[in-house]
Length: 255
Image (cartoon, rainbow, N blue to C red; front, side, top):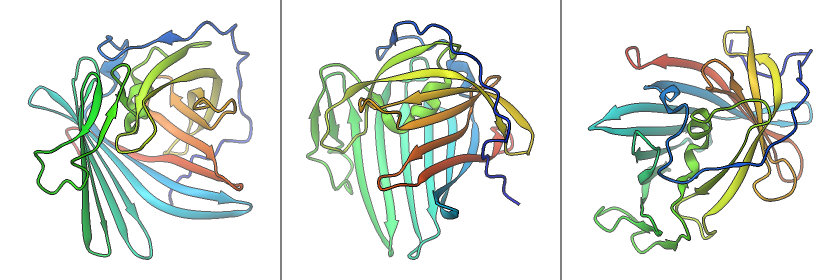
């Protein structure tokens, strides 16, 4: 039976320390705990909470590897449908700084594969013109500063020195959208123990983000030992909650 990772009954919250100013992170900075982003596979269950109802969305797989002196992360969503649908995002990074280089999306629905591919440059994000099947070759978005790939916020936050009162201002961008790159502040709001994928309690840092809306839009729970994300919750427009919860991991030698 899959463990959903819902919060256990007695949450243990620590009293937040006086919040410091956010640490301003730039592309190219050395990330304090990047060594925690290790090769391996992590699988998450995504579902909606609508009143008393739980509605399954998909299984979400994130595979991290080191290849040709680059960090390679591939995500895959397998949606139950109908119709059945899968999406793959294939991305490359500088392994010493997490600087993104390329990002390719491949979606398959009703038998049709659509590809959108992008390249991250210091002052802009552009469509990959050299990829023949890319349907977004003409895409171009100017950036006032280099940005990190927003699709990998989980791994990025795992690489930060999470601690009581810690905050980070991070330049992120979701390639392919019309919204310009921006900075977002992520805050360690406290500590909680939640149920992990094996049923035991995991001592976690609780990290929050408002995405510049003034209201918390996402809550993340990171294992204090590994800083791997165990659970995430985000309110849905119109009510309800989107949940992402870890259901299993494999190290690189077993993946």
